[in-house]
Image 1 (cartoon, each protein chain N blue to C red):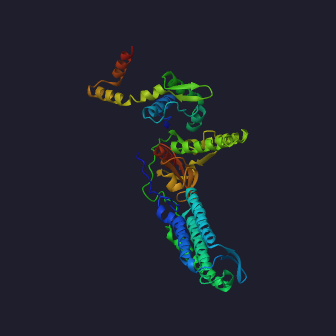
Image 2: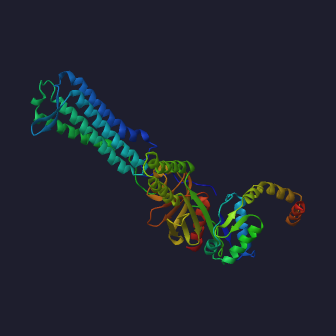
Image 3: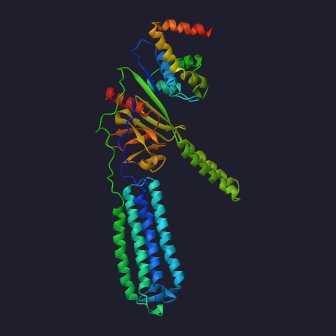
Amino acid sequence: MNLRPTAPSTGGRASLRRPVPVLLVLFGVPLALAAAAVAVVLAWAPELPDPLAIHWSGDGPDGFSSLGGFIALIAATLAGIALLLGAIGVAAIRAGQSMRALRALAALQLATAGFLAVGMTASVAIQRGLADAGDADGAALGRGMLVAAGAAVALGAVGALALPRQHETAPTGGLDAPAPALELGAQERAIWTGRAAMETRVLVALLLTLGAVALLPILVGVEGWASLIGAGVVLLILPFLFWRVRVDRRGLTTRSVLGWPRWSMAAGDIVEARAVAVNPLAEFGGWGIRFGGGGRWGLVLRRGSALEIHRAGKAPFVVTVDGAEEAAALLNGYRRRDA
Amino acid sequence: MLIRVDPSLSQPLFEQLAAAVRRAVVRGEVVAGQRLPSARELAESLELNVHTVLHAYQQLRDEGLIELRRGRGAIVRAEAVDAGALGESVAALVAEARRRGVPAGMLTALIEEEYR
C-alpha cells in the first residue's frame, strides 16, 4: 500500500506560499502610498505656508502644525496603519483564515491607505501658494475628501481583486479511484493503533516560547508565583501535543494521551477513509486543532501522512499519523464488509 | 500497528494476537519503550476475553518482547526492537534453507542448537 496523496487541496485557504501578491497588497502598496504622499508634500514645500493647517472644522482650519511635523504625522500615520493592518493580515493567514477573509482585509487595507494618503495630500494641496494657512478654503477640502473617498473605493476594489480568487470547495474524495480497503474475513476482527505527536521543531519552538513566558515574570522581578501561571499553561497544553488514534469495528477514536479531548467517529457514519499528505502551514495555516484546507478540520501536528475521514454531510476530518494508509484501509475494509 | 485476529482459523486467538505484535515489531511499526494498547482496550476492540489478551501478552513477555508493569501496561523492550532488525538476516537464512530444501522444523532446531 503506497501513500497516495490526493491533490494538494489548499482550497480557499489563504497562504503565505504565494507571498508576492499577498505581501505586496498588505504591505507594499500602502507603504508605497505613504512614501508617495510624503514625496509630493515635500515637493510642494517651497509653496506651502508654515505653519500648515492640519485640522479643520466647519469651513476653515482650526489646528496648525509645522511643515516638518505634518510630514512626520503623514509618514507615521500611513506607515503605522499599513504595518498594523498588514500584521493583522499575516496573523490571519497564519491562523488559517480563508482567502475570502483575506481579500476583505486587503480591501480595507488599501481603501484606508488610499483615503488617508489622498486625503492628507489634498489637505496640503489646497494650501499651496497661501501665505497664511488660516486662509485655506474649507469647501476645497470637502472636494479633496470626495476625491479621497473615490480613491478609497478604487483602491479597495484593487485590493479585493489583486488576491487570487479561489473556490472554497471540499476535496471530493471518492470521485477519483476508490480508496484501498483491507480484505477482512467474515469473522475477522482487527484493530489499528497509531500515535500522533507534534512535529519536533514546532514542539521546541512552542516550549521555548512558553518557557520564556514562564520565566519572564522572574526576569522582570515580578513575584515567583506569576511564573507558576506560565508553568500551568505548559501543563494545560501538554495533552494537546500527544495523541492516540485507534481504528476498530466501532470506527475511529482520536484522543489525547490524557483521554481528553477525544473525538469518536462511528464506523457506520464513515463514507470513506483516505491516506493523504498534509502540509500544516499551507493547508491549515499552522499546527494544532485546525479548521481549514478546503473545509476540512482536525488534528494537524506535523507535515506528512494523515488519515482523512469523510462522513456524509459533515466536514472531512484529518489527523496526521504514521501508517495512515493502513488505518484508512482498515476503516474501508470494515465498511465494505459490514455496511 | 495493525492487529488482526480471526476466530475461524485453527490457530488459537492468543497466538494470533502475539504473532501480530511480533510482526509489528519486526516491521518497525513500534519503537522501544512504546506502550501497547491495554489488555482491556484490545479485548473490547477485538471482542476477545481480557484473559485471552493477557495470555498473549504474557507469552510475549516470556519471549522478552515486552515488559508488563502493573499500572503501566505492556511496554516494548529495546531488545525486541533490536531483534526486529534481524528480520533481513532471518529472511536470508530462510531463503537459503528453502534453496537447500531444509524444512522449517529443521531450521528451527538448528537455531535452537546454536543457542545451547
